[in-house]
Image 1: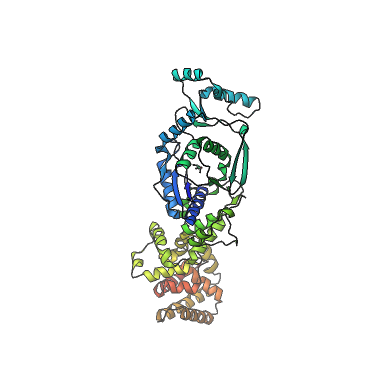
Image 2: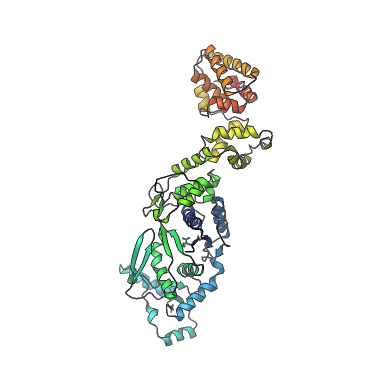
Length: 483
Ligand code: GLU
């Protein structure tokens, strides 16, 4: 079977987590089966769609590496096609002209509401005689085109996730295909395009499940084969409400800005509604493609857990090589005006060494900037809390002892020829002992002097990474920091 799937976003908003998940599942299916993944921009709502959102969607997909085949399709360029399909349905009597004015429909709706009834179009124009229709047309009355939902039938379709679904046609309104201003509706466009683009599997959010019976009726009226349906479970936020702007980042590109790796986000998204047989969490892209299986998509709502996403991102960062992380961190450092051109060549090893040191603690790429500031910049921001905890003394003799110890340490470091982990640790411990300074206390003071913080990677790693000159220089500042 020739698998053809599509991601069909409406550019009335950003590419959000839900959209990205839908795109990913379509892409995985296509890549696994050697099929085709197309991108269709559903921009029929000209007023609410915008080129900026189209850009956001394309950029977000590219960033995630969800490459599409064929040129993207734009529904706004296909209005004539939809109109001709509506015309075809009028001819075959699968649809009819509805001359009801919006005012008339509104007043009927109000009346139904007042009587406590659900409003559904009363089909009054369905039974117009040919003469009546000709009269309206002669008078140039505007009309919408409505689908003629068959009476008393069952629409049946099989969803590959939700199973068999049957809907009584009595519960389906004669829905509009073409509005009186001749703009096509979503139902008409989606079925026309899925037919003409030979879509084999419609993979989309479960919020579209209620639309599907209408679409099946349209396929039948057009005498076209119904595609396979794969509806994906809804995504809920941590508060169990449907994921929305309230839950944070609205655009996938916002995650890029916040320092997430596309591979990590992609890996996280695949578990939103899909689980492998062995509960594996981390996948290479090849594993994902090979292991993806529609049969393992869950019906139950998926829960978006930002902490788990951070954890996953941290996993990806810690297993990446410093070389792999370098370009992204460089651009973040540039933004913060912390980038030093020397790191491009002669200082390269030092730069990569800093990344190596920080990567096991970083959850996001931006952590390299926050945690790495003491390594990337000489302007240390001393946290007041760190000074209070490690560099304030009630007893002046204690302060003097620390200063003396640090002077001795600096002197020994300056003379040290092989400035490696082993040697610096040995010297530090000896000096501490000579001055009766407890390890934790001495090291805490050194940590603040070198990084300005109470927490950092292992102190000896910090010292080696900073190098002799910077270490000695920063230790020399301690007397001016004492409180
Ligand atoms: N354009 C629709 C949306 O953004 C998707 C339509 C579909 O997949 O059938 O929700």
